[in-house]
Length: 282
Ligand SMILES: Nc1nc2c(ncn2[C@@H]2O[C@H](COP(=O)(O)OP(=O)(O)OP(=O)(O)O)[C@@H](O)[C@H]2O)c(=O)[nH]1
Ligand SMILES: [Mg+2]
Image (cartoon, rainbow, N blue to C red; front, top):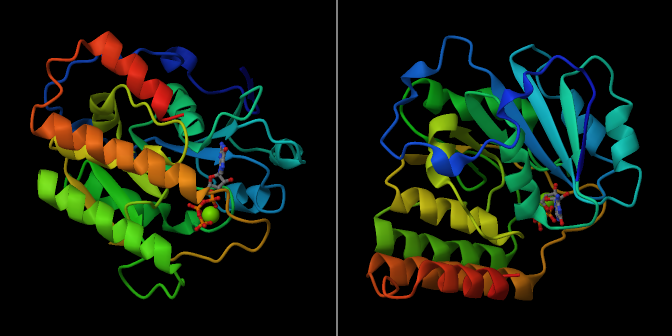
């Protein structure tokens, strides 16, 4: 993995920091100042037609740092990012494709902000809505905010299988933790840095990470809310979601948290369990 910073004025002190040593006590968001630093993490995989526009629409302000995780793109995506001038951008490269979740987790290691936003690089999310997304965190109403295509007036057409899948995941979240997140596969999210520290280690390296993050956050009793955002149809390329893979990883995630909730896996030694779980979710 290699890292290239386009503007060299970011404090690198948090690079490769080990979240597992952080205190797990409830940390309030009150340290978030009037003008918080926002880290925007963008996973990038072959999105040469949209990535430049996505980044250019992120507010051009010193309180924003942009972290692009190139996941072994084989098109001109990286060149497109490098063409952008005068912005605070770090590009991190995976030598080969590791998956959406792996890229988000890599990005999290490099953030220095008070609030961390994740958004897609295919132009389906609107960077102009970042300010709405982070508001509940600044106002101390939430630890995690999920941008939802089901709330508000978004006219985005959701495929039937995706709707059914999200409905089922929502049911499980409600059953296990009394938490409702309708658009639980949305990648447009904001996290307070303290909540991210509480999530510590996550295992899903592909799209299953979206589900794992919410189950883990709910199990840690973090405050998660959904707010309405607009969603654009994909203009270029096609979805990378593989139905079989995502069903498998989401099912395993729900099974794991279900067993954990009802304390059925506490007798399995952690290293054995970790190895087994990490192998089957790949
Ligand atoms: N880093 C990385 N990013 C990926 C990978 N696969 C997809 N992405 C990015 O993740 C984002 C979401 O992927 P999509 O395939 O659009 O999935 P989606 O938006 O959930 O699904 P659709 O609504 O069907 O488009 C996009 O910005 C992709 O570029 C991957 O293997 N690695
Ligand atoms: Mg998409």
